[in-house]
Length: 330
Length: 254
Ligand SMILES: Nc1ncnc2c1ncn2[C@@H]1O[C@H](COP(=O)(O)OP(=O)(O)O)[C@@H](O)[C@H]1O
Ligand SMILES: [Mg+2]
Image (cartoon, rainbow over the protein chains, first blue to last red):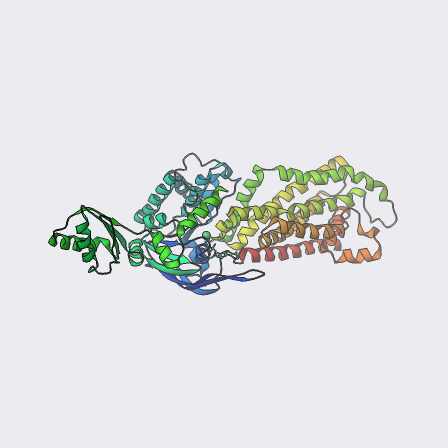
């Protein structure tokens, strides 16, 4: 089995419509190693789906190349298809068909024999809270159930590499947590590599070993969730004191701290930002003891991925979330 | 081998879904039976008109109805594919290693089977209730030829549907093509009755030759020239349809 599951070099896609051209993906380079859970984080229209559809052989790249699960995208698309699973953003089942039939038929298109297909399908139904849905027509399932059925379909042939396009959109919080747990187990139990897209930063944060931040067709940052947050926004530190005298002393100490921003003093509170709060704080506390100053309260506030996105692009992902919720409600 | 398995999988899934909602199959059959009942009797006196080709009214009329049944049933198959595409079913199948041709042929095969069943029922009704006279071998061969013709139209329809991806652009294309093609094939009345210019136009229409071929089967036997021409034209259309359809299924953005 290859150690590198995805290697994308300069992958690019231009959509040509009658009036204009849209460069949806502007040449992305990245690698995904075996057993990693990697997430594409970016707002709607960033180019996540387009990249996924290229990597899954559904869409021909305008430029660039990629090796997916050991096969060359252009030279051996069937080889790629054999090794991967794909859960599309917008559904995969016929409303009139029964859930169980759909998953068995889908597995059989990978050459899996009927009995095994049924066994795999039933196990996934149980793990994804779809018990009792086997004989139900897909149109009678709730949105969340249908989404979980999509995910089960993508996994039924036990692919080595699974692509999930916005897997948790439309799921309630409990189903999302359940799904995250399931995705975590895929890696630990089956050594499956997971590549997913999301515009939810909490999802990227909780689930992904590594995040590729994508905006307007280009990767603007990548790293572990912690690396990204450390690199961009820094930690917020808030110290509370019993008296005004201490704040003056501490403000002076902070100004000598490596990489810290100018401290803001308000009443008996001192606030500042520092690239890595967890390692800066012990130093600060030791020098406070030397100067005989005691804090009554200490908070280190980790930045969120939203801070990252804001710093990289000048826009907030939260607005995007809000927009998505509004559209779903409409 | 792999190709056959894939085609079978796609076929049985499509067939299962059709059987679950057989109302379309029945509606498709109702139309030609209404024609038989309400239009057929008008033909009987016309048989003696000068220029009417050999054969009884039913020997001339039933082949036309069979062709109409096959072409109409198959040409609208694309609507179902647009719905499948919108539900994400086509994309989910295209991401599997199954052959692109199998994704098309499995569906075409379902339509062919439906047409065989409808065509057989229509033939039986015509023989039993309307006194159509034709050798049993010719009746079977007639259904077989129109079923293959239906396969050609269903493949073309799937190709066009997947290319256009919207009912609003697909419907006018289908209607705009079907009406003249059917009118100019002498389906309801033989083209022998038409003025010269109309006959010339009809001669270019492949369907004319298919209808004439089935008529010749009913009247004589299976060895006349018309029969061979009709069969060859049908196979030619089938080849074109399947090549076009699989090309669209293979294409990237389908
Ligand atoms: N079939 C298409 N034709 C033209 N433009 C498209 C098509 N699909 C996507 N786009 C455009 O490409 C850009 C990226 O879209 P997409 O990959 O769907 O983004 P995301 O999945 O991150 O929301 C958007 O500007 C979108 O409007
Ligand atoms: Mg998307």
